[in-house]
Length: 194
Image (cartoon, rainbow, N blue to C red; front, top):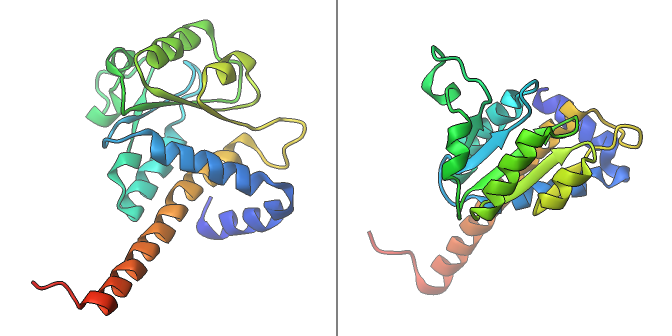
């Protein structure tokens, strides 16, 4: 989905409240991790959210926010995969405070995933869930965004695009605010000396 398609989708969804929910979830996502690579993204053994991880990585780079850089955690990474695609479930045993676990699944989370989410939460990680209304997963999550299959005017894939775009969008506004604040301070006290 390119920028024009995202813009058209936003226009279509404006009256539904979906943009506000996606933006609120994206804000929680940005606040949840304090270190580059501390945003762990996992799906189910059958459906890995590599596409969302790639978009979050791009938004992190474009917005200049390294804390948004995701780490894709895979159930069975191939041994010959590049290093960033070779991170397996063992990474979840070390997750802790200042890190977050984003669970992305359009189906009910299997028990082994729920057990790992529970352990990560006990370890101090912030849990976020993007799902289709998985009650067990949503109860464990600090923040959840539910894409209801029958009520939502968008696909699960489109919801992922909205979340990743929103994750970078607010950051651009914050940068603009910081620049305006710096100009105001310069006007009041004079520019900083080199």
